[in-house]
Image 1 (cartoon, helix red, strand yellow):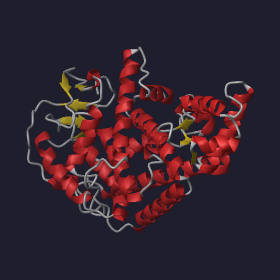
Image 2: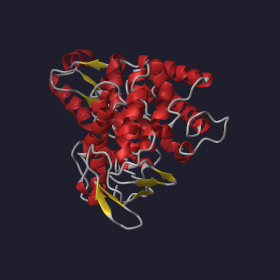
Image 3: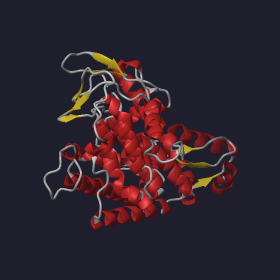
Length: 406
């Protein structure tokens, strides 16, 4: 949006439809590639295994942290580096006094809110429908501060407003890619939805990368297309894999951002001869991107699996708690409470009191302290307490989740 190094150049033809044929974005699917089916199967098995390995309360709490992680990396790809601790503060409505930082915090909150809505089943029908694509954009943009709802032409310095959920009305050039005319966008989205919205789960996994690129290629909105494409990819994989939202491909894309952007650019290129498929765009480039995308997903599932191995995760959390008790920053009973919650997944307060053999007052003080830190979470006095994953403790609890120093 305003001031971003996006390389997006709005032109001047308001709403024109040059009647481009939707064949311009073919192929939409990579056909007959056994290696991709094998990668999709590997991803499905590993994603299911990761979710099954964790107690249900852990999955819910971990998903909260992963949403912040996904937001951090997706915005980082766009050149917006909002520290995880600032994202966490914003979620508590603790905003910076610096306007630029505050605007980026609000952008992060908007991204997390949209993903939370997706994770809670907010989409209606196939994720790739025109209605869902526009609703993702609308929900994201309507929460942004006004200064982030403008896109600037780097040549003329003219500014145009980004309307939440509205399809673009101007021509746009993104790098070397001249996007389709604005009037053609609805027709291309209809073809997009017709193909990607009717796939079974196995085919959706393979097609997620192609859908990711083709949405960016259509470039349906004045701005925000990258975030919408990554949120849509998340939604498609969440449905196809039932992943529990406890890993994020955005981390892998951001960590190999030059490869990611290079693949997207290659997929913009025309067919490279008679052996490069039968569509208008390069099928080989789409195949290469699909392989890269699936391998990146698998790598991120493997990373999270290593990170949350129960014995190692418990050791890191309890080691942190013991250090905090020694430094007199936590009450002594904190370690015992965490041991019980880690073993059980969640527990009601009266059960905790009986298990640790302490009075109500001391238990309330200790639990309140852990709740304040975000180490424990609970939906109310009568609800059980369960483990939280505060971003501030990610370096100790979840090393490598965010870049060092972030």
